[in-house]
Amino acid sequence: MVTTKPAPVVLDGSPLSICSIVSVARRGALVELANASRKRVEAARDGMLARAAEGEALYGINTGFGSFAHVRLPADQLAQLQLNLIRSHACGVGELLDTESVRGVMVVLAASLARGHSGVRPAVIDSIIEHLNHGITPCVPSRGSVGASGDLAPLAHIAQGLVGEGEVHVHGSRTPVNAHEAQERAGIARLQLSEKEGLALINGTHMMCALGAIAVSDVRDLMHAAIAALAMALDGCRAATSVLDPRIHAVRAQTGQQQIAAVVAAMLRESQIGPSHASNDPRVQDPYALRAGPQVLGAVLDAIRFARTTIERELGAVTDNPLVFEASGRWDVLSGANFHGMPLAIALDLLKIALSHLAGIAERRIYWALSGHDRENLLPPHLSANPGVQSGCMIVQYTAAACCNELRTLAYPSSVGNIPTCAGIEDYNSMGATSALHARDAIRLARDVVACELLVMAQALEFQRPLVSGAGVEGARAIVRTVVAPLTADRSIAPDLAAIAALIARGAFVRAECDLA
Image (cartoon, rainbow, N blue to C red; front, side):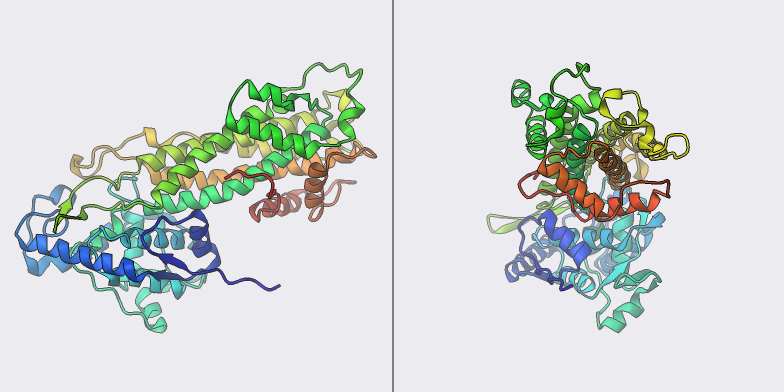
C-alpha cells in the first residue's frame, strides 16, 4: 500500500490546526520555522535583553522562580539558573506518555514560542524541530503537572532531552537511550540555554493542549461510530423511528439534537424494517435509550464542539510567562498568568462527562437488545441462536457495564479540586493535565463500549432478515462484517471487539455527508 507523505507543518505564528497536531504526532510530518517567525522571535529576544540591561527586575530572567521571585541574580548565574530550572523540575512520575503524545506536545510548544512573545532565541525552536524531524522523543512521565504555572514537570522532561540529559526514544523504539547519545548519532547539538529559555520551555499549557487536540480528533471518529450504532439499534430492536421526526427536534431548538436526529433518519431512509411494524404494534413508546438517542447524543455533540473550540483557541496562544511585547519603539516584559490551564481543564472535564453519557446510553441499548424483555423485537435472549446451550452476546453487556463504571469514575471533574503549590504563591491550580489524561483514557473506554454496541446491533439485524434496513445502516453493518462474522455459535468475542474498536479508531464509520466539525 502506498502511503502519502504528510505535508510539512510550517510554524508561522498562525494557530495550529488539530489536523496538523495529529499529522506531526502520528504521521511523522516534518516541521519548519517560517523566516518571518524567525525574525519576530529575534526581535523579541533583543527587546527583552535590552529591558533586562536597564536593571529592572524581570521575573525568571534575572530573578528566581516561584516563591524565589524576590531573589535577584547576577548576570554570570543567569544561564545556570535556566539549566537548574530544567533539572529541578524534571520530577514526574508514573507511566511514560506515549511517543505520539510527546510529539504533539513538542509541536504545540514550538508553535507557541514561534509567535515571538516568549523572548527565546530561534535556536530553541530549531532544537525542538530538529528533535521532531529526527524522530527523537524525550521520555516523559505522565504525572506531575497541576495545570498551572504551565505543565512544569512533563515539559521539563522534554527540555531535559533537548539539553542532552535524561532518556529518549528514537523513531518510536521501545528501548530508551541516553539523550546525548541520540543527539550525537543524529548530528544534533545539545541545546545551550540562555536567559529566560528554560522558563519559556516549561511555563505553558502545551501538554494538556496537545493531549486535548489529539482527544478531540479521536472523539470525532468515535462520535460517528456512536451515531451509526444508534441508527443500527433502532432497526435492530424494531424501535419506532417516528421519534426522529424533525418537528419534534425543531421545537427543542438544540443544535446537536437536531443534527443527530437528521443524520440517523437519513441512515434509516427506505428501511424495510420500520414499515414492517408501523401498524398494530402494541408498543406505544420505546425505552429512553432508543427514544431519546438524539437528545442525549446531541448534548454530547454540543459538548464536544465546545471542547474543540476551546482547544482550537489555545492552539493559537502564547501561554508562558513573562511575555514580551513591542510598544511604541520599546519593549515591555509583562508578567501574567496565561499558563493557567483552567479554560482547557473545564473543557476537558466536560468532554469526560459527555463521553460517560455517550457510552452509558449505548450500554443501555445493549442491555435492552439482549434482555429478552421485548417480544415484539424478534430478538432471542442475549441474541443466542440456541438459548440455554449457547450464551450468545450475554457477556458483551457485562464488558460494556464495566467500562461505563470506570468512565463514571474518570468523569469526576479534576478542575474542581484545587491544591496550592509553591509555598502558596501558586494558590489556585487547574489540574487540567489530569483532565487531559483522563479524557484520553475515557475515549479508549467509550470506544470499547461503542464497539460492543456495534457488534450487538449487527447481530440484532441478522434476526430481522430477510428485511433490510436503510442504506446507511446496512453500510455500517457491512463495515462491522469486514472484521467480524455473524455469531452462529459461541466463541471468544474479545478479538471481535478489539477489531471493531480498531475500525472506530481508524475512522471507518466517518460519513463524509455528516459534518460533525
